[in-house]
Length: 321
Image 1 (cartoon, helix red, strand yellow):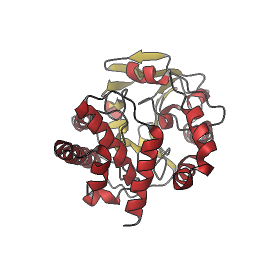
Image 2 (cartoon, helix red, strand yellow):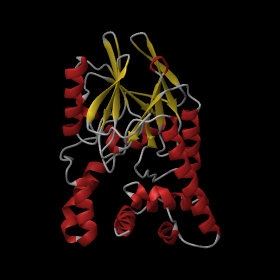
Image 3 (cartoon, rainbow, N blue to C red):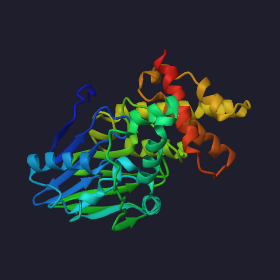
Image 4 (cartoon, rainbow, N blue to C red):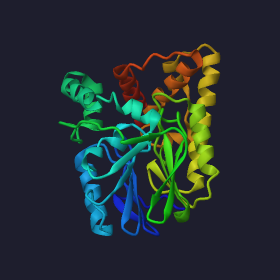
């Protein structure tokens, strides 16, 4: 499947299934989906704020007749902001997420954290400007993240009309609570953050080994179309490329850890090769740090400001060539 067609759009996947594609797929811009049959609809993920989510829901209503008031089921593929923070608009829906995702969502104060960082950003020099560039375009004011109505820890099947839709936990991978959403009759899987296409992925928690296994789980499905969490529609070739990136970074990080290098030196030292063409290369710093914490059995949370500074510095390095 070509991955060159990449514009903001609601893409008809056939059979009553749709994908919302949001370029450029980088910080805060994520994809979502809609599975319909008869008079029933299931929404896969919301977006990073209610303005963007409302725009998506309006497009879905125009194309399918299903808007926020008619969508009965909402499934979040993980707990992160750009897959959940628009949940408040789906007041009529019964919402689902994995138990691990729900645990994270229950303590989510991300909008307040981002608000504080944006308030401090003008006095933070280049890092502050980087943060403004990545986050200021979105409306986090008054956002209150909401958790699911129902949770699960093993695979469950929901009905959308006559369609079976499988919710398959594959985390911890990119996040603690990753799931994929599989519609067998449509031969489609909504992969959430397990798959990014043409953009650098990131994990603050990992383990990356679990993320690679999640890619393998998708490869084992009998599907034609894969809707990634970020980037254009793809097929299994896109999953293989994602798996190649993760395997490469994991191996390179572990070699340098064994040689006594620290995580930041390792992130600066790894030559990304063909993957250097993907935007947001600086996210490598976070993923490498996660691998090092896994090796060291270090359960302490990452220092957000420190890691944002590392990301900004690596982004700058790659932009300079």
